[in-house]
Length: 392
Length: 82
Image (tube, chains in turn cyan, brown):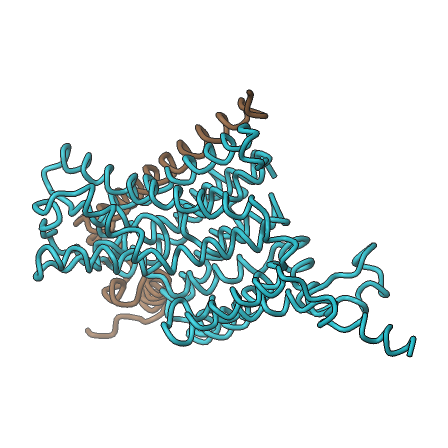
């Protein structure tokens, strides 16, 4: 009888809390959104599954044993997701740069090279990151809110405003590993929800006449320019912010492999096999960090709010700078493309395009919006590099 | 009430924003200069013609190869047209 009681005590059912059930429900919602609504399925499906795994008590899949993780006994007692989190994210931050390798191979810099001033919009959209950074610090000094973020945690939360999942994971893993699951999930959730967040702001900040602006077609870009950009861009950015090297270096490597056309197998591997395998482990591992005891805090609500603020201000920053450029420049740009300066490639560019078409059905903004969109990826990686240089 | 590390936070904000803008302005300048250079008649006539006619089609790496090959062939092949 005693053995039976002991056995029951050691089952997951006996140890399941209300919080676990709530998080399992959240995981199921993510899986539903991915399958039924096709919302960011490559992220939400594995994350949702990881959340469910993290909330099944006593399973070792998501755990890393106490003590020295390098000790053989600890390695044997740890689960694959726990080990992936510890070694591939927290200890050696290698998964986000590998994702950037694949993203680089999938990225086309032509819009930026054709219209370099769109780079400015990508930089302006990073303003949201700093608004959220100060917001996180500010709420930490209001005792009534019961939330306290360190300066490192504030930085890790604020990068959500870059709307770039791998960059958020990269920075959180360095500055605030305990928040990693939450910041990553909030970033991906908002990226999926950009279609609800951005259009009202875009309409609020622009007049119908501005949204109707038709931009001149981008000039043709030679192959030599496309080959030169990743090399020169990488050299300049890494010399400026050496800590951005893991992301920018891999991004540009992936890009030059694709643009050169001489290593099609490597380029194809980076944009297919590598990014796919890494996405599986990265996303399930991120989900596995969302156990009830980690998530169910007032801090999580604060992260949700700050992420939203960051994205809203990022969108605003891009649009406002586009309007300022219009005041100073003869050649008008449609301010909607400024909103694409938050990374979320290509979602943010598509939203700008679709809003432009609502105002003028003959307007084709997609190639123009891809410029600030790709610039946003570079911009948020640069800001992440600055954060790690000063706070890491 | 006091925000912890306020000086550091100000430093991070100013450096972060200025680096992002300085970085992109630098890149913009380089793209402009390199674009103009590659597009200029001077570059096309002096560099591309020197390296070989196929330079633009084959890209910079191939161009260097073609240029060297052409130069080598010119040196090695005696002019027997006469």
